[in-house]
Length: 430
Image (tube, rainbow, N blue to C red; front, side, top):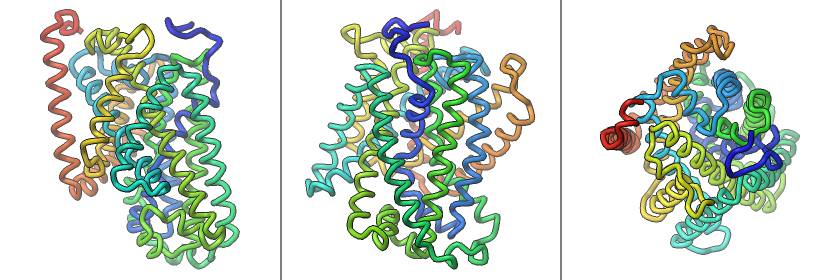
């Protein structure tokens, strides 16, 4: 069924929906994650990615079953409604997701700005300028429509995966066997602990749930897109981790930080390798910004329709630009231009883990309608809680600014929900 603004002729394919998810996942995270994960899991980071991919697949099972039964522009927020009802709880989660999505979009755009500024010698001021220009450009792309988003993501994903595949192949043929020997791996408990880091590289797959409104047959296509995206991401992550830790020692990876991929490519590809990684980073961060803005329109329109958000957030400026997209882009621009978002970099991970767990717990209540197996949902919830608990006891404890920001945003989300529903008798009865 066509939406008000699009016709069936501009529907997304399964591959395009999957690529929107891949573009969201394979963003800046892979460039900064390896060093931090290596400090915990050593050369066994590839095992950590493999485990994280399995955990993500369990969450993907829940999303796929819910999405097939309840396809909606509201994406995973629709699943929260189905599992927990259309009350205050869902409203708070909706405001929380909207706010955090804007923060993460701004943060990824700043990462793009950093790479672009370094490549053009634009200096510190250039970082903010490039970040703002990217958000404006990607917001414009989203206004044009889902097909424009999908085409852009296809280009981004092809470039990123192509270069990372070249990187993986060249490094895998030049690895030092001793670097990857199980004899140098840390304890299995340390490898499991590192999953709290590597799992974050998969969190972006949730954006695929928002493509349901643009799919011709969401009941069939959405599950395929979810698992295709997770499969591509897992293979890329494992191959890249093997290549990096096969060429460099753990100490070299840790000291290289965000440039670990470039450093690993240099012995094989020379200075060209460093340039290729810069290009990859630019495309990856641009794609992640594009994917970050994509859910805003559907999220706001759907939650406004069911009374959780004010009607204005579901409207369209000039009958074209979704207000939810405009608001998200404006907030992201203000944050990117005026704040140090790296200080609260983990906030998106914390919120995503909580929402994922809530979706699966709520799914248990409606599993008779979706046909999901209770034991798979239970396993997904258990593994998610392990990752979330580890994250809280490590990352949030070590990053008090992130914890404080999370509390503030949660309080603002609760306040926004209460204020809106007190002003709207219809919403308060939801």
